[in-house]
Length: 422
Image (spheres, rainbow, N blue to C red):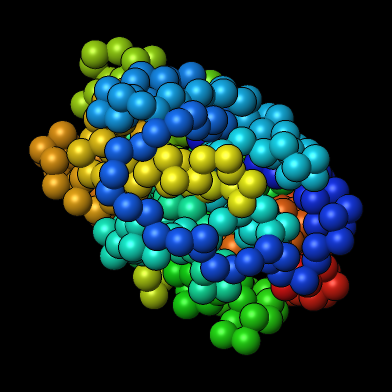
């Protein structure tokens, strides 16, 4: 499953947690940590839930932590992404949480609102060691709940052979981006760029355009801003790719987009780092020289969406000391470099990218540059509901069933009705 999509997939189980427990007015538990964590070796047992590929391979890294801390045992439970959100929600409602869980980055606000997560102990890590956008995914109302474990962001994948034949270079601005996509079409691509025509998680494509236009999702007072000029510019620009026939109104899943790109039907698309390996593998040895990646083009900025996975410790943990020590160890640059070799997950700490395997790689170095200008939606408990409205209205716009103005009016109205959960 696409990691960026998987990392933010949400379900209606949020309602069970937020209303069934009577916790709708922000974090119900203490918003203070239970105390600092010392540097003594970890002891006892830790249970951690990890999703997807991370859950399958974390044992390999946990074994090293056990070697360094002989009196600790780490029990890893692999949880499928499809059921992870509901399983966490159910464990919170039933008071049977693990010690630690990996969380999709947009889940933090929701689960923090239940009071189930312990705030990150002061001094455990230095927030300045992490990419700003990534650290922000762990922060709710100025309080950090957990630590970013790995990061993901989108860059532009494009066919270098087609771009060279058309005499164009990777775009840096919105105007260049549209002309670039058209140029790739002149070389035989049916879609100059592949964009989802609305629907599930398409907000991840439209929100960066609003950020690039100088807008945001919430203003400084915590009010939704979908009725702003920046969002109008974003929707209008995005829709123009469909109106002008530059992007086909087709949703490609992982497994499909690769072949469309390899055979030249799609000239460019946006995705995370995992696609580098997939394209090399599926395209064969000769295809490696036919594609490259570039930072996303922008208007006032070149901000991209950031996702990934965070690690949170539950208030009900039976071994919080060892749990936080494990989280701290997983956040160390040396550990994250080793973790990349096991999982191909990008480090959340900036220092790890100084390692030659990142700094000298023509693909990974671009992701490092993009992570310096990347952003996530606000950590609010209701983001799943609000973003679903954005997905729905964007699809109506690209189908021609509504206007940009009417869509944004609907989004703003429904978002205000839903609220932030605070």
